[in-house]
Length: 45
Image 1: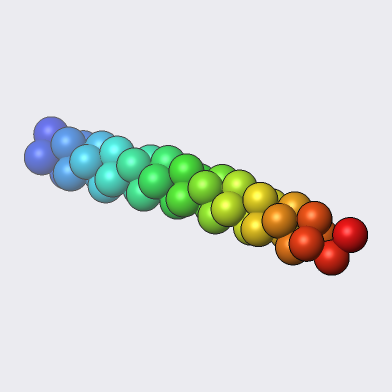
Image 2: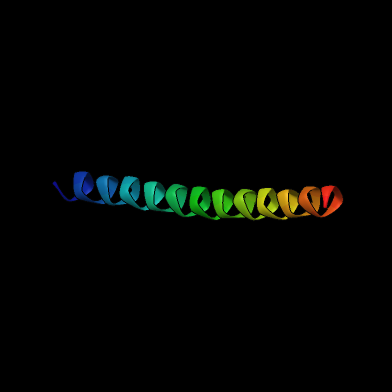
């Protein structure tokens, strides 16, 4: 029973870590896309 609890806890931790990494990556990509769009609009203006 204790083993099952610890394994589910580890799974929750890995899912949390995955979500954190995914959030950081998506924010980073959005930041890059935003600066790229700003650069493009500056070139066109």
